Length: 425
Image (cartoon, rainbow, N blue to C red; front, side, top):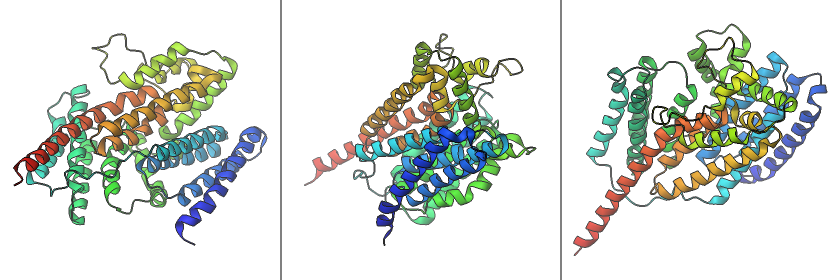
C-alpha cells in the first residue's frame, strides 16, 4: 500500500478518534482523575495524525509546527505540573487548523507555478543579496538601541533578501550553493541574536529562521519533514527556553514557559467570561484595527488603541506587582473570550476570514513570488500565540517591503521580456 492510500485510509480514522476522544474528555475532563493521561492521549493522537499527513504546503507545515511547540508539548506540561485541563483549547486550535488547511487547498492559489524570469542568476543578484544580509548584520552597531529605526534596519533588508533569494533559487542552483546561502542566513541571525537581541520575541526569531528554509523547500525538496521537527523538539525547546530564562528551576519553565503560557491565560479568560459574560464589541474592533495598523508608531497615532494583551492584565491578574510594560499572550482564542465572552466564536470567524482574504490578496499581488506568502504564513504563528495586536505589530514590517520589491522585480523582468520581443528579428 503506497503512502497516499495509507493517508487516505488512516487519516479519517485518526481524525474521528481525535475529536471523539477530545470531546468526551472536554465534557468530562474535570471529573476525570488523570488529567495528565487524558491530555497526553489527545496530544499524541494529534501528533500521530500530523505524521500521517503529507504536508505539501508551507501553511500546513507552519500549523503543524505551531501545534507541536505552542499546544501539544505545553499542554502536557500544564497538565503534569499544574493539573489544568486545556483539552477544549487544544480541540479549538485543531479544528481551526483543519479548517484553514481545507480552505487553503480549495482556494487553489497558484503559488508554485512561476515561469517568468527563470534565467540564470546574475552576479548582481548575489551581490545585492549579500549586501542586504551584511546590512542586517551590521546596522545594529550604529542604530540607536531600543528604537524603531534599529528594528526596521533589520526587518526591511531581511525581507528584501528573501525576494532576491527566491529569484536566485528558482533557477537551477547547485545544492552546495543552496546550503551556503542558508548558512549565511544562519550567520546573519546569529549576529543579530548575539549582539542585539534582548531575549524577548523568540517567535519572531523562530519565524525569521523558518522563512528562508521554507522558501527553499517550496522549490526543492531539502528533506524538511514534521517527524524531524518532532524528533528535534526537545533540544530546540531547551535552546528556546534557555535563551529566555538562562536556567531552569522548575519543570514547567521547560515544558511550558512563555510559549505555552497563552493556554493558561486562555483558561483564565474562559473562567472570567463565565462569571462576567459581558461583550466588548468596541474593544473587539479596536483589536481588529490593530490587526492591520499596529505597526504605526504611537507618535504618529497618539490615540492608537492599546493591545488586549496589555489591557487584560488588570482584569485577569491585576496590574499590581507587574511592570507598566507587562502584557499577556492571550492567544487567538483567549483574546476573543476576553473581549466577547460567549460570542468568542464570532470574533474568531471574523478575524480568520479576514486573514484568509488578506492571504488571497497577497497571492494575487505578489507577482508570482512566493516569499510574501511565506512571510504571511509563518507570521500567523504570532497571531496564534499572541492575538491580533501581536500579529499586527510584526507581520507588516516584513510583508510590505517584500511585496514592493517583488512588484519592482516583476516590472523589470517583464520589461526585459518585452524588449527581447521587440528586438527579435
